[in-house]
Length: 174
Image (cartoon, rainbow, N blue to C red):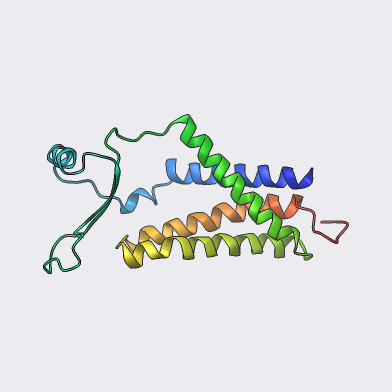
């Protein structure tokens, strides 16, 4: 029962932090820029990318020097935050908490060591999962670092619950 509580609490805490971080804090949006003429861009995208998907320009590796690079996800019908997206995001965080909880359960050390293990997992996920965006896709480094910091904070907070409630295998107390 403690394991289930740790997983659900950890997932909910990570989800709540990330919701707060995206909806309240300005740091994610600080790196996003609006296009100058959105009406013209919308017309261009409707004509050039009629179906949803991931688009890259130029696709030709031999494009002339100075050709603008674009990496974009196109959603023709637009995108809004829906209940199903929020629920899927919550389930994703709970799944992450479950994976992390099984690792933490194998560690027979004290509370703060286990919290820092969760933080290290969050940092590793951020570095390995997001730094490639800056390296290969030209995402601003500041944006990527914010994404990594966001994961570290989320999993520090979730780690407090996970370390508290996950019973360590081979230990009677936690």
